[in-house]
Every structure is written in structure tokens, then in C-alpha cells.
Image (cartoon, rainbow over all chains, first blue to last red; front, side):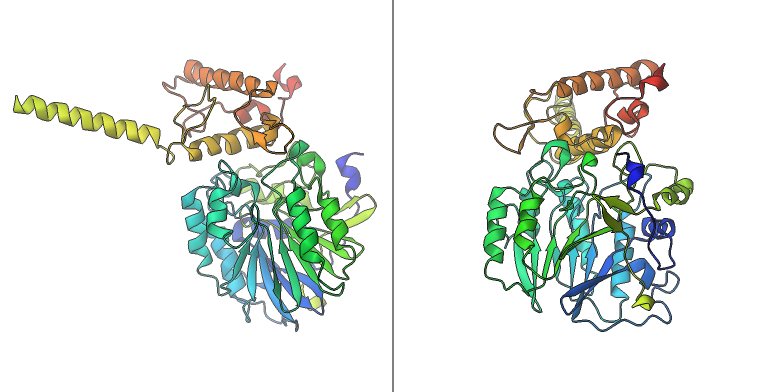
Length: 329
Length: 136
């Protein structure tokens, strides 16, 4: 099967084409706002909600009622300095500004990894400084592979993982929802796939065993827990076992980063969603020789980003960009 | 006599400062095992920059393209020379540095340095092996 065979159609009816969405992300930074309502998560791209001229919520948009909201940001790559985005601090700040512009601050923020680019102390310091400007004071992290370079995540754990287990996995409850942060970047499988490992899988099984099947579950980890594009290492080698533990639950949402673009897949009771980066875009799966920052001259960036206007079908499951405008609710 | 002593102290201090700057150009120097082409006192920042921004992005590969796993583990043994790709990478580093020195007259070309003209990506364009048809 060729990568292009995976492209089926663009089902996004939000009036925003993906090229424009990515362009907006590349230069303005973005995040995802998640609303939990009756155990169901709905997502909203920050760029769709916030007027880029005023910095406020767009005129006419009404924030629907929900049990609570939280924001997801990912792949801030502080320390990255290439043409794909020479100002990653600025775009992270913009993402935080957009979150701050939401009338009711999200209860907390999830950062799904690659906080830093080279796992350097000064990079983590910068992120911490920027995150202080967020109105939502609670930020929950999981590491990306860039955060554990050199020291197998020692520094990451010292900063963000003091109350976690193993290499940084943990869970917490909020408003009746069980959140689970997993680490799949410390070890590597063939082809660069993520690995959870037996110890973490055992912990996950134990963590879930006392929960009723009606408990809404949100799992977040850096590398996708589903096979987005294994040829580029965009998947986790032993995720199937983890997902088997989640099958009995009525509502499971899996949030990931790593691939710097929004792709969603629904499989039974589990909704998978990958978030865009606040730093730089990567090519759509299979549309380039390899994954990596889009390295093009700055003035051509927007036109090159236009090639990523795709949805995917893999194993007959439709993967669609489903960030929805508030007007469509 | 006094002047000579001052001069000696001054020279010694200058050497210390220059050595320190060289060793910590990109942060604190680390002690890595089995570095044969890259400086043995390279900082973690400089090493990570070369591995991520030069090799990974230049060739579109992950760490395990060159680095072998530890026995019975998913952890990488970064010091191991078990994978032939690692030796090829060393040869490629020599070649790249040589090209920059010989043809672009850089006196001390260093991988990851912004002054370097020919990089991994110059030929690889994000692929593990350069497009050979383009080189013919």
C-alpha cells in the first residue's frame, strides 16, 4: 500500500481548510481546548476560537456548557532554531495567550511532551517561565523523546516527575474523570516506535482495576498509542496491550503529540487524537521522505504547508481532523 | 622579574579561560564513552544538537539507526559499535569535515557549527541514503 492510498477525503466541515489551519499554527502557535461533558470529550482548536487580531474569543462564538475544560499543548521544542520556526518561544507564548483569552480559564493544561528540543536546563527554564503566564496554574506533563536525551530522563524527572512512578508515569482524578499520563519515549523499539514496557503496563493494569467501567478515562502520552504511520516510528510497539486494559470502559480518550499535526481516529470506545505542535509543522504521514521539521524558506512556508490537506484511512478506519468550531455544536 | 611573573600569570589565565570556553561552548562538558571523531569533552548540548539537528533531521532517522540495543533490552547502548551504521557515520563525519576544510577553506570545521557549508542534509535530504540518481 502506498501512502497516498491512505488519503480518502477531507470530512472537516468547519469552514477552515487544513492548510490555513497549519499556517495559522506555524506562525501563531496553538493548542487544543478540551471540554468534558457527561464523560465525552470534545476538542476545539485554539486558532479557530481566538480572533488573531484582537486576541479575544471570536465574535458570535458561544462557549458551550461543559463539566470542565482543559487545554492541551504539545511539542513546544524550546531550543529549536531552524527556518521552520526561528521563534519557538514566541509561538509558545502565543499559545498560552490564546488559552488565557478563553473567558473561563481551563481547569488545567496538559503538555504532551517534547517540552524542550535538546533536554537542556536553560530550555526547561524557559518553558517554566513561559508557563508561569498561564492563567491555568496546574500543568501536567509527560516527556517526549527530546526531553530524555543524554540522561534517560533524569532531569525531566527532577523537574516534572517528582510524584510519578518509574520513568514518569502517573494518574490523577479530576471531576470524576481518571487521567493517566504514560511514558513511551525512554526506550525505543525497531523503527523508532515508542515503548511502554512491562513495568509500566503492569502498573497501568493495577491502576485501572478498581475503577468502574463507567469512569471516563483520559490517557495522554507523547508518541501516539495507535499506529499512525509506523514507517516513521509514529506508533507504540506495545500499545495494544495497554489498550486491551481500556476496552471495558465506556469512554476512553487518548491524547498524543509527537507528529505535530491533528489526526483523529475512533475505534470502538476509544477516541485517539494527536495535537499540533506549538513550534513547527511536520509533513503528513508518507508525504515526504521522512518525518522532521518542514525546512523551507520562510516566505514559502505557507504554500508548502498547503500540501498537508489530507485525512487518512488505515485498516479501514477513517482518520479525520475533527477539531470543531463552536458554531457547529 | 615582576613583569615577567605578571606576564606568566596573565598567559596562564588566558589559557585557562580559552580552554574553559572551548570545553563548554554549548554548556557543561560531559564524559561520553567511545567518541572517536567528535571531541571527547563535548557538551551534552553540542552532542545533542549534532545528533538531533544534523543526523536525525539530515537523514530522517532515529537514534537506533546507528546505535545498538543493550542485550535483552529496549535501551540503547550508545557506546556500542555493534551496528555498522555507526562506523559509516564516523566515516561520513570525516568526509564532511574534510570537504569543508579542503573545498570551503574552513580552518577548523565542526559539525553542528553554523559556519559549516556542507552538512549531512546537503546530500541526504532527509533520507538515510542519498538519492544516488541525483549524484550521477
